[in-house]
Amino acid sequence: MAQLDAIDTAILKVIQQNGRISNAELAERVGLSPSACSRRLDILEKSGVINGYHARVSPKALDYKMIAIVHISLSGQFAKTLAEFESAVKLCPNVLVCYLMSGEYDYILRVAAKDLEDYERIHRDWLSALPHVVKINSSFALREIIDRPNVGI
Amino acid sequence: MAQLDAIDTAILKVIQQNGRISNAELAERVGLSPSACSRRLDILEKSGVINGYHARVSPKALDYKMIAIVHISLSGQFAKTLAEFESAVKLCPNVLVCYLMSGEYDYILRVAAKDLEDYERIHRDWLSALPHVVKINSSFALREIIDRPNVGI
DNA sequence: GGATGCGCGCAATGTCCTTGCAAAGCGCGT
DNA sequence: ACGCGCTTTGCAAGGACATTGCGCGCATCC
Image (cartoon, rainbow over all chains, first blue to last red; front, side, top):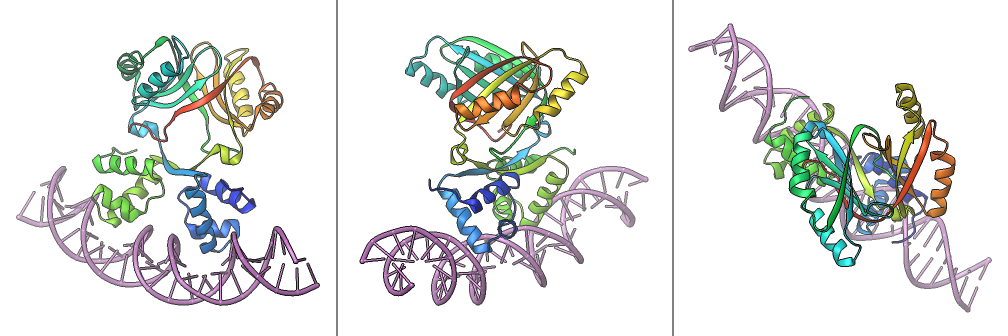
C-alpha cells in the first residue's frame, strides 16, 4: 500500500461521496486529465485502498423498518470459541455489522429486520442458535441520527 | 415511492454490491435492454430508493485504525434536549453512525479514530462537550467480523 | 372495440473510457 | 550542475457506453 499524495486523497474524498461520478468529472474536480485520473483510480482499486462501490438503498424501500443493536457474550474467549461463533454469525444475512469488542460484551451486532415479528424470528432462528452464546441483549434504534459513508473526510 | 417489481429488486441487488457497474452490464444481468435499464435506474434514484453511491475506502489507508462504540446517556428525554444533543453530535466528523436507542443508553455511536491518542482527543474535545450528557461508555472494536453494504440481500 | 397509458426495444448521437506513445517532472548519484 | 532512469503526465484515437426520441406491444378501462 503505497503512500497517498494530495491528489489521491482528493480522489478518495470525492468518490466516497459520489461513487458513480464519471471519470471525466472526477478528473476535472481534482485537477487532472481524464487519463491520469483513470490510472490513479485503477491503482487505488487494485491496491485495495478502495474496497468497492455500493449503492445505498433506502431500507424502507425494501421494507426493512427496524434496526436492532445486539450485544452478545460468549462462554469463553478461546480462539476456537470465537472462530466458531464468527463463522456462524456470518451466515445470517440480517446481521449487517459485527465487531469483536473489548468491554462487557464480546460482540456487538447491527441487525436489520422488517418488523418486530421478523426480529423475533431472527432472534429465535439465528441469534439464539449461535454457538457458545450465554447472554444476548437487544436494543432497538428509534431513529437514525447519522450514517456517514466516509471516513476521515 | 412506487412498488418495486422483480426487475427493480434485481437492479438494487446488483448495484448494492457493485455500485460502479456500467449500465450496459447491469442491463444484461437483469435481462433488460440498456435503455430500459437506464430509465429504471433513473426512477429508482429520483424516487429516493437509491440514496447515493459511495466508494468504500479502507480506513487503514487513511490511517484510521480504531473503531470505538460509544454509549451515551442524557440528563433527560425532552425533545429539546435530544435535538440539542443531535445537532451537536452531527458536527463531529469522527462520528460515523449515531442512533437514538431504546434501552439503558439513549444514544449509540460508532466513532473512527487514528489511534488511542486521537480517540482521547475526540473524547475530550467532542464527546465530553456534547450537551446534556451524563454518562459516556466507550468500548473498542478489536476486530471487524462483518460489514455488509447491503440490506435485505 | 377503440382509446389511453405504460413500459419495452431499437437506433442514433454525443460523451466517455482506455490504451499507446512521447514528453515532462522528479530524485539521485556522480 | 549535469545526466540518467523512473514515474507520471497530457494528448490522441478507437472502441464502448449513456441517453434520448420514436414506434410498437400489451394491458386496462371506458
